[in-house]
Image (tube, rainbow, N blue to C red; front, side, top):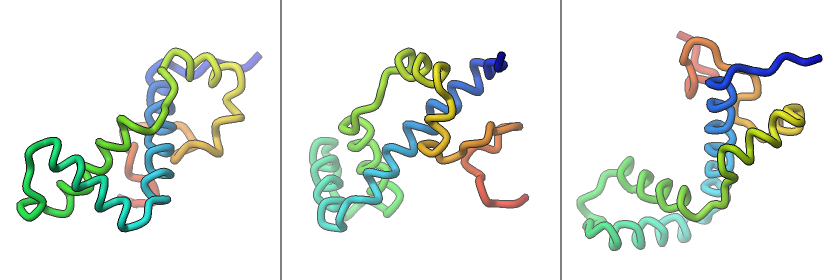
Length: 110
């Protein structure tokens, strides 16, 4: 019988899964489509593109994708994950459980 990971670890894996899906879509966009999404999001937010820095522009695109990329609800994802966690490892940015809050620091030694 396999041991279930703690809830906080499962939530971290779910967030990792969602981030991986959004990253996958973001990286598949052409430069033109990325700029178009950024322009649309800036216009909706009442922002002038010329006043935005690069990070702010990418935040707008990421937020836009977060609302447009279909992602499973947490409860649905947990049921599927707990039934077959091995089916998700290749879909995660960080397949191994994170220990000590270093999420997002993959490949960056201290």
